[in-house]
Amino acid sequence: MKKILIIVSVILMISTYTTKSYAQFSIGAKAGVAMPVGSFGQFVNMGFGGIMSVTYSINDRIEIGFNAGMYVFKGTDYPVHTEPSANVMPVVADFKYYLSSEGFKPYAGLGLGMFLTSSSITTPATPAEYVGGALKSPATDLAIHKTSSAKFGVAPSLGFMIGDELKWGACATYNITFSDANFVSINFGISYPIGK
Image (cartoon, rainbow, N blue to C red):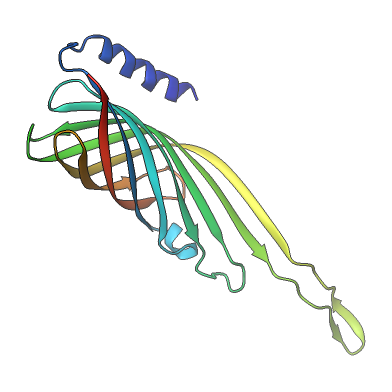
């Protein structure tokens, strides 16, 4: 939490030195797919989700903002019959640098913040096992085991935006959570200015 407060404080300090003639807030939404990376991919398949954002344009090339979203992953059934699943919620401060100021505007970005992860795995019910009339192993009931964590992470991205007022675009982001829940997301979305 302290890291998020520091990031937000830096963003606010930067915004106080921007020129009022250009400073502009925008709101946006993105949706897309998320592909698990590394060991995360052993337990879950491709996920789906999206991001809501509030951004602040310092000038025609630099943009800072705040993103929050959710990605939902279903399990690969490994181990067998365990039905694993996971949800990852990124809550990050975001910086973007645009390579062009009009028309087709490609950009490189970096997000810093927290990744809130929750996961569950099911232990299937099993009948009692007997050998020669003697109980070898007792019956077990179906059980769902849940875990959650909050990890600091980074999210470098590459993307583009097109348009002047209502903008649309796409981006690819590598979400590095410093845990087993790393993934690459590919999103398509829109952004609209709410003030100048």
